[in-house]
Amino acid sequence: GAVVSQHPSWVICKSGTSVKIECRSLDFQATTMFWYRQFPKQSLMLMATSNEGSKATYEQGVEKDKFLINHASLTLSTLTVTSAHPEDSSFYICSAPDWPSSYEQYFGPGTRLTVT
Amino acid sequence: DAKTTQPTSMDCAEGRAANLPCNHSTISGNEYVYWYRQIHSQGPQYIIHGLKNNETNEMASLIITEDRKSSTLILPHATLRDTAVYYCIVRVNTNAGKSTFGDGTTLTVKP
Image (cartoon, each protein chain N blue to C red):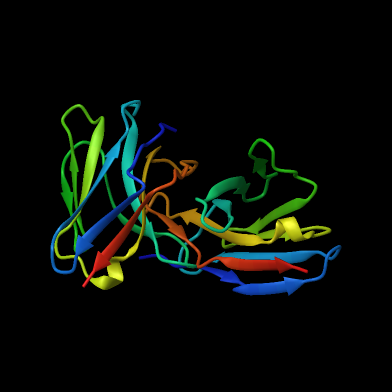
């Protein structure tokens, strides 16, 4: 099946700094990608839908100025956590549908963010 | 997207079949049933999906009731590596078909 990668796999940053997470579709093009956040022992929560060449769509309650999303190419979406705080520490996961080749949605391996 | 209901946890003996139920009584006609699993600290892994017919692949079988209000994922011969959280999701099959995750079922396969 198709592969989605994320970089970095884990990152530690100091409070107040910004962190960029990359999501790449390795062998297919994705005009749409999704970003999720998962806190310990909880389910995945959809944060936003990333659209190539246009603005991202954010779910209710997600601060768009804090979680900046850029989808500049058909294989890359980035999530930047700005002015990170300890409560932003979480597991961030992206996904991309391999559409219209298949109807499957492929998930990245996730990025563990720890803010100290 | 329609909401799904799954048991919080299930146990299964190694080598036996694991049957994981999911209720999706408000599913729409154009929504598919998808199953994913998440092994600890990894991204979700696609297992199988279907619209109304039963489906089988190398990983599992999916049984969807005739009224489409519920489904069952079957792992025919569970192994210890199948221990994971299993998520049942219903969504449309388009490029914008985002997946909304519920709490899933934690399956523990025991030796």
